[in-house]
Image (cartoon, rainbow, N blue to C red; front, top):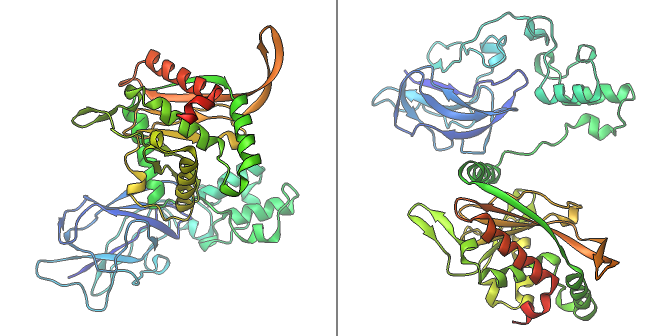
Length: 422
């Protein structure tokens, strides 16, 4: 007898979730209580355990990582040895409606009652039926996490809000409408009728999150910060703007990437990477440049920066950035950097702590260039100051060599001409 495997409910407000991944393979025997797949609700990802046993059969049209799935949707089957998936099912369209086949009283899941011929995989829970009227046990209103956050931020009493969600639960748009009606916030009709867009947990975002977590957990990160006089760099870029506007004017990021590439030639330790088989120093001066995209932060790599003239470095960064924002980067364009440069100066940020881009050992952050009074030759003068933030892995690089490298970068920025002419 085949057993349906359906999408459970992880919270009161959940109508659909994001499928994470299968934790068992198609054709593998699964025992009761074993983790079966990952499902992501509004607040977190959760391993869903099997409440039955059998041979897992995932249909060709079953969900893939990142797919949206609805509560009660049939996504796979348990079968006995030699048994086939029931005819006419594809794992993508079948649906069991929880509201008609199960109690909806539990905040984390609900039991799906078995039919006469097929038993649905169920997640058992207890409680009263009070929540079917939009009220949780104890009289508290049922609201989504986002609705509760909005209510807290806008000082809205949830008990006075009418929920428009299934079984009367309160959604974020209900809180926004209540806040608008009481004059606490000014919103347009469109903003009341449509919930605020939340970031999507895409495959790219998962990868970024995993890499950030690994970098924080596996490196001994230290950040050095200093300012340098960028007046000559600003003047140089002004000359480019006046003389070659039609050919493309290099950005400050372009200029610094080129200068860093030249300095890195003399600092192999800063390029050292800790791989599984030990330390390794990349042969080329390949620099990753952080690019902000709708998908998340990506860092495509410019190859051989020390060998390229500034014009080509600038053109390559522009091309890679355009490809990143269009979602057209290849894996090869994201692989193999020896160092990373990231610039938040355009957003007014002065200094920050960038996270190392593994397996690299260091990353340079650029802050906002600002005109400030400084003392030069016993005189107070106005100069363009650029904050630099160098994060490095102390397992590979000690503080003094890292400081010397940062000092060399600052000197190159303060006197860029000789470096760019080389």
